[in-house]
Length: 151
Image 1 (cartoon, rainbow, N blue to C red):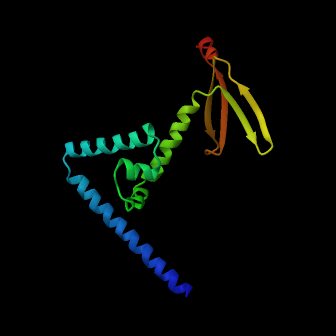
Image 2 (tube, helix red, strand yellow):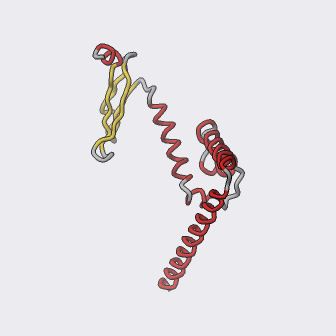
């Protein structure tokens, strides 16, 4: 019973991969057949809708696909296949990072509670760096006055 199920799943997976590959080829042929102006129009239309949905309206992945683009649920998987799901989530993280540029307090909290808290002075800002192959987050509390005095 399990062998038949695994064989059927394998067949389905292979068929799906082939269908995606065929779609990729067809889509690339379509794109390459467009004029420069048509490619520009398509690029503008898609980027504008992504920006409005994710950045301006803060829509979810589904809300972007169905509400902004007007797609039916069949497009959910295609959005994942082309990388839009990942891009959508990255845009959310970028919005959070942008908002972090204006923090006025830094806190480090673990399961036992607050370990560190620092209210920034008006001339201070926070800088973040990833180190050790992105395994370590370093947080620096910097001073604008230090930059001015050491220029």
